[in-house]
Image (cartoon, rainbow, N blue to C red):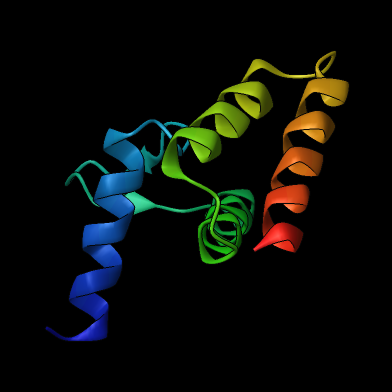
Length: 88
């Protein structure tokens, strides 16, 4: 499978799992990614590459999507993951 195909599969998966904010689309239905969208996708990829379970990435994504006021919860989640990574 070409890398481009696997990238689209990953993006669709992230959309289905609500890891991405709603992505803007053209009239023809093509996705239009902003710089913020691309940056967020990179964060999700790095979290997964570090071994964070998808359920934890989803929790983190939900906290980010909820907006300000939950930064301590986000940090707690990331610190817990750091402990897991260092222990393995």
